[in-house]
Amino acid sequence: MERNLELYDVTIVGGGPVGLFAAFYSGLRELKTKVIESLPELGGKVRGFFPEKIIRDIGGIPEISGEQLIQNLERQAKTFAPTIVLGQRIVYLEKQKDGTFLLTSTNGEQHHTRTVILAIGHGTWEVQKLEVDGADLYEGHTLHYKIWIIRTFSGKANTYLRRRQYSVRLGATIGVHRCERKWIA
Image: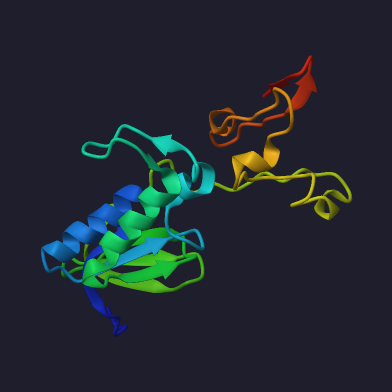
């Protein structure tokens, strides 16, 4: 390898809950650690889709919101000062003659490491935006691709939305309409 890249003991691809805990644990073992996340922020799908959802299936934690969980995991992961790279999607991995690995991102940046941990969950996700002329004029007002605060969408009487109605797998399409005083997704 001709490039003089900094060598890491562990590079974790994915900055969601599992990647963040892996970063903490690697640091705990005194390993030089890097986390590479394709999104512009850490937290993965928990932060993206479920920040207000109450999570009750984590041992030792009776309940916690998705956002609070990610904040705690970020704080814990940063205990040992890992290098964090945001907004880079790894598209190529090559094993070197010396047994190390060279990872390449979509922008061409390369990362050199002894060990790779893939903590990618279900992979990256992208919003499929509405393909209608002028739709961008309504984004953030009456057209939303992500729910930040559920109460924003709650009306008077019996109208409400539950985040689980928005648990969308890649490629799924959701339409929401009002019918007989109930929300249907």
